[in-house]
Length: 63
Image (cartoon, rainbow, N blue to C red):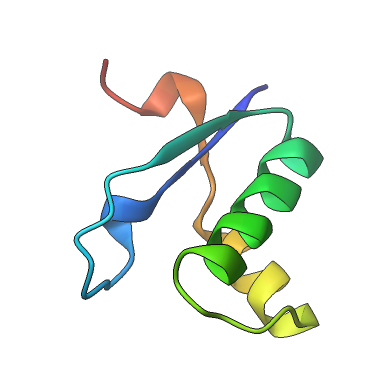
């Protein structure tokens, strides 16, 4: 099952609307890089866990 990370579901001062979808590990890697480069987060196990926990099944996301 493909997974989706949607920045709109995270509090953000920038109002980011990026959505990333793919296999779970791919989405986590891309979302971590995005969180670091765009939102200024530090790479940490906690960040990776937070992102992994926010993922939704792609089928559950309305198109």
